[in-house]
Image (tube, rainbow, N blue to C red):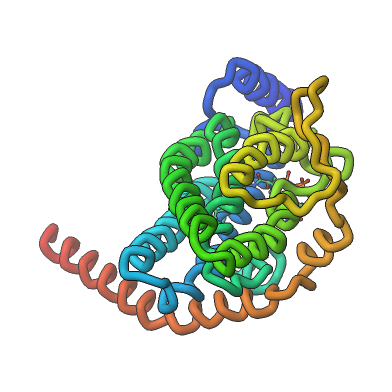
Length: 318
Ligand code: FAQ
């Protein structure tokens, strides 16, 4: 293709983005657009399946059958989200094996939040409330993403995340209305998860290498800082209802900006966790690798069955 032809395709592409048209898998797209989407969508998919691990830790210890059923359903939903997202990434020309390989070798990232341990039952409430709450704010914006398969996957995911957020909040409401020890457990969980939840939105805009281009391509409809502020403004009143204290002495309502002012994230901690030095990084990647290895026979059996079916169809056609 000549340089002139590429330029004209680029112009058509930019015009489609400007008109808010969805870009579909078979449409022409700049190579960098394709690669950026593979990066973000695959990392998003990895986050969903790695995110199953801290909560799976509590299935056998859920305090009642009702809690166990809800937790199991939530964790299965997260696995489903991973599958929609891997499928969306596959439409951009990467195989699922390559994506898993990138996860297992540390080439691809997944959300920093899942490198923290879930040590008490109150963590199950807090993960639902804060982690799913943060995920919803991020993902509602992504429903408007320009790449069709990603944007459509988000619609279903957001519906399910909102159930997750509520089931988490309800666990905390119960604990906060329970014994002093239960309320203390809820406060301790909030103390540990608050700052890592704010880190989920990524580095400050000024330190985010990808935001500017991703906003131009309408992959990101809002910046990291905008979404983080939205999350804080939405979540603080929910903490008040629970009677819990957000562990940030600088948190204060600002009547002029009509937003909360708040303290400083420990960016050193954030980058340590992103680079693999968080409390559970090694454990999480090992768990995924083991699951992949133990699942070999299932994949082999599924492939053998598919091959057999294909041969049957060919034989019948002859
Ligand atoms: N953790 O330039 P930016 C969930 C990396 S789903 C680790 O700002 P970008 C559901 C970033 O990849 C949660 N790495 O990057 C659930 C980039 O590295 P790279 C996941 C991070 O992509 C709940 C570098 O830093 N959600 O929770 C993080 O424009 C409960 C520079 O950053 C999504 O993935 C981080 N927190 O913006 C499941 C949403 N932040 O690739 C189970 C989709 C940044 O250049 C239980 N993703 N990095 O080497 C996004 O919206 C974006 O990718 C951001 C980062 C906002 C995460």
